[in-house]
Length: 494
Image 1 (cartoon, rainbow, N blue to C red):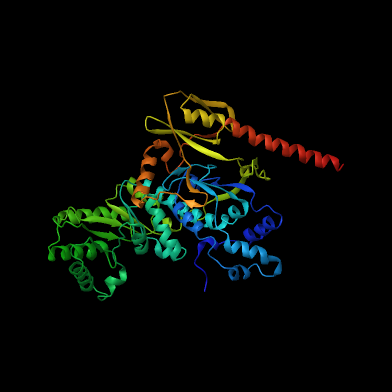
Image 2: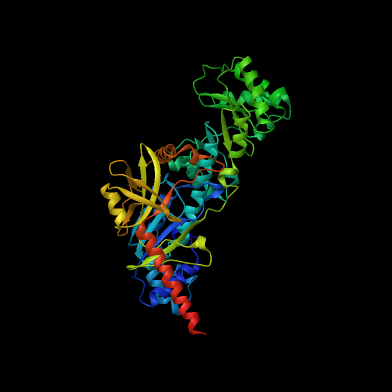
């Protein structure tokens, strides 16, 4: 039987490194790790945070496995002492994190872990597993829901990569803007209404005939009164029988525009613009002007945008695998990197400049003016710029890629908020979780604070994100020292 404690859904090397820390006396060395991503998917400039609640729950599960569990993958006498340690090891450090529903830009710390290095190291894999999945879905849901002003339902459980992904993907999709989800467990666990219509198998179960289609509709209405009624009309022929049978079934059962719970039809194939417009005309002619048209069929943000441009008469959309699997970019790129050991900032330089990281214990501020986000800046905690921002003094933000480019925010003319809040203190979860509806509203409020040019699906304007002068200087001082040492090493070999 596989353990369901996701705290140990990890990679073996996290624990073999832990043994080295344990054996050499480094296990209590204070370490700071940042979780961040380098590039947003789908040419976005930003992503949506989701998964923090599950990360905190995962951390609380450390220390619940016995020595026998660890012996299965760390066997032998050489691991005996560290197995005992891991079996009792609970998290004792501090965690700072962005709120779920936050809009986050590349390289900004989403989660900061400050803890004994052995504790912080083993969090890497389960944390990334949770956050990469949920942020992929939340960010894709944001793109899809931004392609229309009409409601979008998440219908992707059957395409998700397993039940766990379906449940938490539906949660992330809701935070990212979806109106609801078809997943019943997600709805129950997170407190939103699950929804759904019917399958073609329901219609054909009454016989492969036009009469059977009408009987299916009539039976559904009779067995679901006082609920939303959505009839699937494309099993045989949408215009020549499906909509006609739906209209007849509605009228025969007294369902009209006075029905208070809502009613409609669903289109799942064909030219959705053409069919929706034709259906709208037929429904209106029958006096069913409030009958909604719901569209599905392998939709994504690009198809929905085109349907809207063409003037379709769809009232709401159901989107499956495009959201549930983040189909165009199924792998989100969060990484977990060590940035400080005790009081010594560290970085990874790498052969690839894109993988260069920002060192040190950081905090990110979001600068706003007149209710709109203007810029983000990541500082070293307590550095000069951080102190000036906290005091509301005039600040200058410099482009980290071109230090000659700068913008000034004058005292009294801006507001600022830190994006990372403390959620765990000395091992104790102090995070005040909120209902999922508040998380979604927080995302929507953040979205409204971006400029419209920054919300474009294609070729968005890039929002200004910078680092403080002190962080910039630290970063390049470390790089210069490394380059000098590498040159000296190679020169000594000549």
